[in-house]
Structures are given as C-alpha cells and as structure tokens.
Image 1 (cartoon, rainbow, N blue to C red):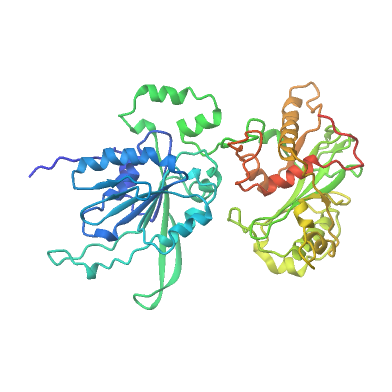
Image 2: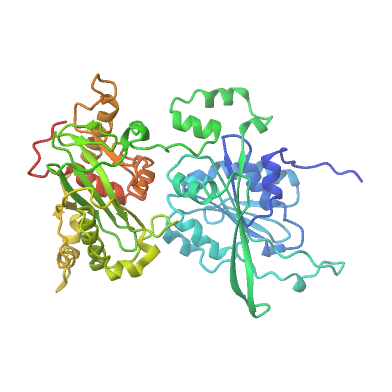
Length: 519
C-alpha cells in the first residue's frame, strides 16, 4: 500500500532537528528555516505510537500574545493528519488533545515564580519558543524538574505483546540570536562547542530501578538553520530582511550570527578596539577609588577606577597617554558570581566581602599582604577577581548603593559591617532621574573616545571612558545590556545589571579633588 506523507520536513537542519537524539536541543539561526514547524513536528512524531496520555508536552513563550503565531501554525499542521485531534481554545485550556490520550499545551512563563504553576507535573516534552526572550536561565532550568515520565514499557505492552521504547525526555527550543536572553543562551549552547557538536555531561546518580549508582549522560546541542534551506519563502521576505538598517539585528537575523550586541543601550557607541586598553601605572595625582553594588543570592560587583586629572600617564611602550580631566578607566574588578554561572551570587557575607575588598585595595597599592583566610578558603568560588598588584599608590572610598546603609531594628547595616573591616563607601547618587542621567553621561564618555580618534591629536576633547583589557567580566556584560522597552533611554533592569549599577554610581560620582566635569 502506498502512503502519502501528510507533512515532510525540509532537507537539512529541519530534518536533523527531528531526528536528533539529544535531551536538550536548540534549533537556532536566521529567520525563516522553519524552526516553529520543526518544534511542532518534534512533538507530533510520537503521537499514536503507544505512549498515550504519558506523551505530554508544553511549549512556552514569555507572554500570551506571543503564542498566537505558533498556535496558528499548529492548526495548519495538525489538522492535516485528520486523526481526531482537537484544539481547545479557551483561555484556561490552550491545548491539543488526541483521541489516544496525548496532549500538547501552550503556556507563557518567564519568571522564576512562574515555575510553581507546573511543579510536580510530568512533561516529557518541553519546548521554548524564541528562547532568547527568556531574560535568564532560571525558569528554563527549573522546568527541567518537570521533564520526567512515570511510563514503564513493561507495564504497557503493545497489542502484539512487544514493548515500546522508553519514553524520551527532551527540551526542544527555537530562537534567533538577539533578544534580552542572548548572552545566557549563547553561553549555554554556542560557546561550549561548534554548532552540531553534541555536548555531553556525565554524572553518577542513584538509580531507584536498579538501586545502585550509575553514570548517566545528558546531551545538549545547537542546530543551525538558514532561510536558504526553505524553498517556500517568498523572495520579498528575504529582501525585507536584507533591508534591515540595524547592523546587529541584520547580522543576527540574516546571518544567524551570535557575535552581536543585542538591542543594546550602548552597542552603537561601544568599540572594543578603542575603549579597551592595556594596563599602565596610574599617576600619583590621579584619584583611584572603587564602586560597589551589593548582592548575596545575586552577584555583588566591586569595581576599581582611575580618574584622570589632566596629567600624563606613561604607557608600557613609553608613549604618553593624557585623556581629559574626569576621564574614567576601569582598572580592576571583583564580581561575585561562581565561574561558569550567570546572575548567581556567592552567598558570601558582607564581612567577608569587605575583607576581600580591603585585601584588593592593598594589593593594588603594592602592599605585600597575606590573603584573608576566608577568601583563601573560598578558593575557586571567588568569582571573577581580576587585579594587577602595584598598579596605583592607594585606593579611596567610592560610591555604593544606598541600600547598604539600610538597617532593621537593632541591626547593623551592611555598610557598618564593612566599615569594621576598614572598608568604607560614599552613598551613590540616587536622585530622581539618576538612572537615565547616568546612562546618558556614560554614553557621552564612550562617544568621546570615538570622536577623539578623528582629531589630529587622536585624544578625546571631553571626559572619556576606558577599560583595562584584563577586566573581561565587565567587558562581557556591559556592552550587551538591552534598552528598557518602555523607556529606551534606560537599561532594562531585569538583566544581569550589577556591573552596570556599579559603573553608573561611579559615572555620577564627583570626587572633590577633581575639578567640575562638563559634558
């Protein structure tokens, strides 16, 4: 008997995404290769095979309105099969159900708290539509606890007595580069291995079925798709993509490149080749201070700054460097986030953080002091500490978030606890409008460097902003900060913005020793 295929995947990435055996799949790339159709087909491929109500899936987006397109596509695809599937369209349902018991839900979620609507449920198939819309990995990773099934093949033999394969547990996401979650998605899927290369993570776990320890390997992969694979696309659509003026968006959507800054507040002004410079000894007349944004469950940020006063500095190659008075150079950083993680704190006490700051202050000034025992014991969990001993002659107190001065009844403030370790701060500028004002001044300082390269002297005419090249944590986080969608002049505060807060405090800070700064 001849059978006619109801739906057939396109050759290339779409077919590969359906046959891939990995537990965690990201189908990413340009606009238009058929990623959404592949996600829907990925779930549908196991309907009617014998899993029944055990084959249960959910596909997430961040908002209800964003589900419209994928629901529409599901109606076009699933009705082709003519297998009795029904779509339940009420706001409380939003699901496909099959006569054989399978069901696929469409839901929205993005906050860590949204997970609790699904806690304890079984979803062997979990999908995320446009994963880079997820601001962090929190909700995504928490849903893994629902990626499970109580199905046992031996309990549900087929009519002929044979056993079906164990039910697969999988997370299948689609996305383009770009979006508020660009950084964490890139770190999870793109940076560890080339596209198409399976990432394997093996751990020893107790298997309740065999009652012994066994090695279990979880697999993860990114599959790259291109609009060039889709013969059904209208060339006018391609022309529309090619006409995109934003260079980062065009690079992401047309080339599928992850080497972009995504809708950034500062990406139009950031130039790593100009703003990132090699370290040099800080002249004694320049002010060196530090800024601080507190965090415990979330990262803290300690940043050390040199503020130029108009006198020359000598570069390692002997050349002179003389930015205008008021120019800032980030010279060192200590970011309280475990290595390899995103937006997670060290849960270090304020006392121990202060001991670390005091030690770094002394090391930057060239003092040969022993590392505090509390810091030494923390070992590799210290996060990102990038310093150059002896780079300056001393460190002064700088601005910190005013929240560290808050106290409860009969409690010492974080600032009080730090002061006991010899670390004091100056309250940061938190006046109305300071957030946007700080962003505007920072943008002006970035622009001053770019404009300075166009002058005969090659130096900025207004206060500028530079970063020492070893401050790789700051460099990886600040240029990708996304604009606030409701207030484009501000930074979206739902991001990993702790370094930005510390930077903003410093930009707005005006030490008395430096003359007035004019922009």
